[in-house]
Image (cartoon, rainbow, N blue to C red; front, side):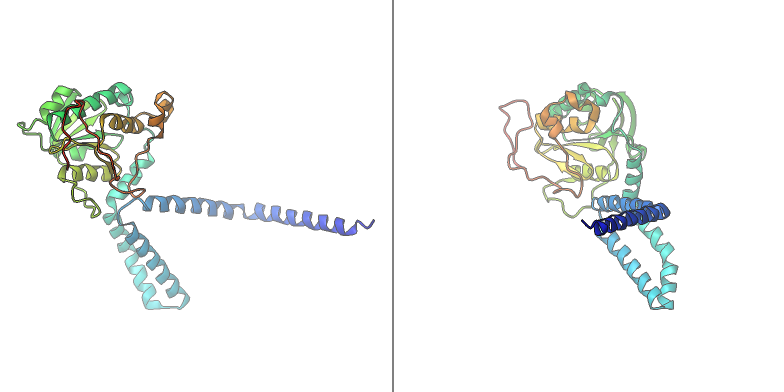
Length: 312
């Protein structure tokens, strides 16, 4: 039996493997660079899908790269000079235009837990749920922001600074139609009310339903610029909504509201004590799903079964 062909094949295979190992050893840094750049580009693309004006940024970048490549290949001196001259101004302009998105991205890099202290506990979630639906039952319009790791000092300064323990009685007083601060928003940090009568930025999105009023647009606007949860109670209908990362869930009943709030506030390591429905709940992020979910069934937000549900 002639084994020479088999021996030659094995020798060629070993030689190829040896050459491959030598190549990898000599060029492993290039491979590492490719992996790092690929990862950065992938996550940058995922983030760009979530921000407003992403298409403009992508097209500007592609156009600039194509013009640069063409000018270098064809020796177009004038175009090359123009591109080099405007590149610095273009970067500054993009930073100014996308300043809210950049601020949010850098803040997200340092956020490991959304909330600290008392708001991590179920007792605080139950208290917030009771407060929100008590406001709904009384027909009080309300706008409540739950501060996370991002500082809302700039927003607090637009209203009245407070330092009071969170309580249902105080929230009901602040949002009573006869009080001076009821038109603004309340900011809660941990278990304390730190601001009232605050002015929230209005969302400028043009894909919102016309039924979404100014209070809901303010909640959306704040959630677009900061990593906060904003609770909105409609004064006209009593419906409860929740805004997070530029998305809004409307017409939540008490159970749905508590489950979604639990999913956002309770840390991952505490999910073993939550119900299966809580573990399955996922709040949509901006750009990942329709801004306003299509709810075919509108359930009442009140605890009393005899309350009449009013249409928007």
